[in-house]
Amino acid sequence: MNIVKKQRDFFQTQKTKEISFRKASLKRLMQEIINREDAICDALYADFKKPKFETLAAETQFVLAELKHAIKNCTSWARPQRISPSLMNWPSADYIYKEPYGTVLIIAPWNYPFQLAIAPLVGAIVSGNTAVIKPSEVTPNTAKIISEIIKSVFEPNYVSVVEGGIEVSQKLLAEKWDYIFFTGSTRVGQIVYESASKHLTPVTLELGGKNPCIVDQTATIATAAKRIVWGKFLNAGQTCIATDYILVHKSVKDVLIEALKKSIINFFGENVEQSSDYARIVDEKHYTGLKSMLLGEDVLFGGDTNDTDNFISPTLVNEPSLDGKLMEGEIFGPILPIISYEDEIDIKRHIMNYGKPLATYVFSNRKSFQRKIIETYSFGGGAVNDTVIQITNKRLPFGGVGNSGVGAYHGKASFDLFSHHKSIIKKANWPDIPLRYPPYTLPIKYVKKIKSLF
Ligand code: NAD
Image (cartoon, rainbow, N blue to C red; front, top):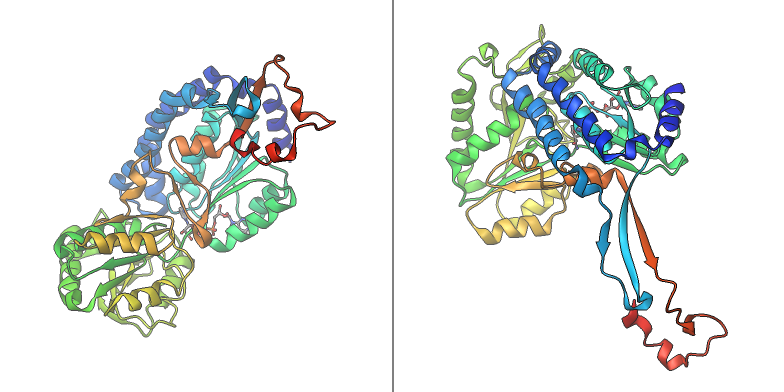
């Protein structure tokens, strides 16, 4: 593809390595997003009726915070880092140089279509790379505004957008990139990983998973219910770190269910369809898939649908069939299964049924139980007594593990992710201790002790 060659040539000019160039680019991008913030909200509303509050909080303001942090810290992050030398090389000055990879491909999904295309771009730019973004075709209005913004801020040989669907994505993946940053499903993540392996291209895979939320008998139920409902039905459940299913201690199950129902009504009213604070399912394909997950299940609350605009109300499912469609994989919609447990063996049995999730939540007032969940299970990240908020601290790296992904970003972690860490030792010409050169004269009994010099 022509664009890859052009970006490669531009990268070779060394321009992107200038800190002033990176900062100026980030500032221009920031200003353009500020200027067009309302238009971005309109695009996401047109795509799936995303409430303006949610677009501002989770897309534009989120990205603006990343930009501000990157502009402020670009100089210090990029500076070669002095490292203490080893005795072996005395005297020397040792460093880690942060080197941009080169030309980066960013492939974005549709659920936070603005944030998940632009937040990785901030990382690519602050660390001195050029970038091509492939936004999701499922949210065409957002893809269009992303393309317009990038065109008005950058020369295409530096940053550009290639719009299109799966075939375009496949064509892009066939190219040789210096780094690929992919956000999307585990299934497509595998395809991306395979394509990258042909050129030994390093990748970040930000994938999904089946995120458990454990509520024990000591949890503060009213607060737990509010925070679970908020994190689950935000974006109509189409959030990679939303609770996928609840595991609740059987002694508090009924109280929790009542509190969950109350929170849903408090947040969205008796008629959720009329609420301006509730998004729609992104398209008919996903809508039909979600509806079919409810077949044969015990719907405790909600379950209302409207085919005209892919509406599914917040839905609670009681004790789902464990080998049914609902519990087969990631739900990624406003359906919340509630499973009761008796003891920790039960918890383990459920969690270990799935690959390592992107998030895990625990509601409990017992510190020992909170710690046990955090330390026993492997997952991308999570929260104690809350959901989803782990993404809101730019100093916390965000990413999955195992099935939920490879690599982590946000804030400085993004800078580190898009930089090769180049180790350099600067050595003096004198003294030049002869012991390392052949013919080796140092007695073996001393060679066996040199480990303390490394
Ligand atoms: P997806 O994997 O279907 O698509 C993501 C991107 O890949 C799109 O741009 C699409 O055009 C492209 N694509 C699709 N099929 C392809 C193929 N066969 N070959 C090459 N490219 C292809 O994901 P989605 O439906 O857009 O997003 C939902 C998924 O993303 C969920 O699993 C969710 O958990 C995950 N997700 C993860 C994070 C995270 O940060 N970890 C964030 C949001 C979403």
